[in-house]
Length: 137
Image 1: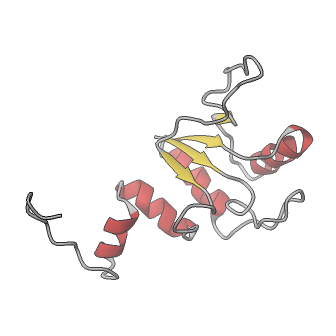
Image 2 (image 1 turned 60 degrees about the vertical axis):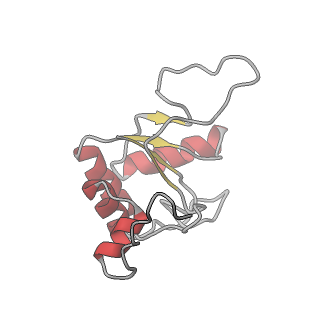
C-alpha cells in the first residue's frame, strides 16, 4: 500500500517550524510498515530547508520515504499549477476527522486492513450496525 504520512503533529509533536519530540512509537511503527512492504510518502506543508530538516530527522531514525510531497520520487513539478494532492491508499494525519490514534492502533488498522469502525466493533466499543433493508433510509 501507499501510505501518506504527515510530519508535524503526526510523527512529532507540533512545534512547527521547529521539530517537536517524537510521538511514542511513531518511527518504530513506520519502520515496521516499511519492513512489511508498504511505500511511505511524506506529505507535509514543510518546504525548502524545513522540509529537508524533517526528511533528515526521519532518516536518522531509520525512516526512508518512497517519495516526499509527490507520488513518486522522480516526479517533476511541471508548471506553476502543480497539484500537491497525492495518490495514496491511506493518509496518516493528526488533522483527520477522528484525530490521530496512537501508533499501535494505526499499525493494527493497517496490518489487519480494517477501518476505524470495524476496529471499534472488534474492541466492543460500539455495536455492529444492523443491516438496513433496501427500502429503509
